[in-house]
Length: 320
Image (cartoon, rainbow, N blue to C red; front, side, top):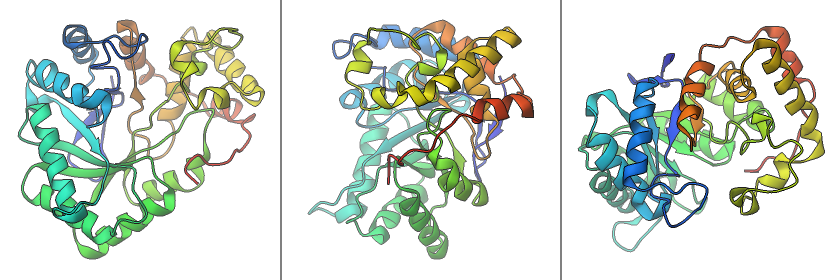
């Protein structure tokens, strides 16, 4: 496993982040039936693979993901060895406005995570009608109180993120160090603006869906059936478009030539891109963790990267 500094923070994170949307999904989704006991085994396997970076959100499985991370990860592994990221949607309310809502959201995350502090707290989307000054004031409150070490954002337009980062710098409030965005070999639209901005501002990205819902594993290229997740996934049709076939075929070709798995090539490509710190893996099998760890050791050649990127066709940005 390789490690990297997360943006302008002092956090050293594994180049693989374990995503938390499966933890607490027992009884909710057949493709990720993980309760506390099943999740605990994954946490141990992740730590054994060298993963120290874990991502969750208040909305994942109605807060159950955070509760399981609190009890079976933070509760069973040294807290100082873990980098915990969680997210909450910024809203306004009659009791303290957006500023007060952020403070209460963080306090709720702390209770569920059973910890005194959050390493990285991310704004999970941003309503353009919210007063940005109030949002930043709420973030400054949770950082100055010691409840949050660093702040970041997730799933928003590049222009939105640039605006709040710029205003935060001008106001001298909590500095942004991370952005969780959609980025993989089949969706590269953020390379034109979001990722360039992050690189310039020393902000790390930790992209979700790095394997394009499994399409970059190569195993679903000609599959006539859809998994339960794909049937309820808004991205599934985009990833299965015919334009993506040549890209997936090249992933498989390079993997075969190197004697590694296609998913490892897809991760290695993502890790070669500027600003990318750690793809967020939604692993559902133990071997996925070891494979991802080994992918961080793969250095693709310039020729291999060019072949992987050559057939990409631009599309409409999802967060336009």
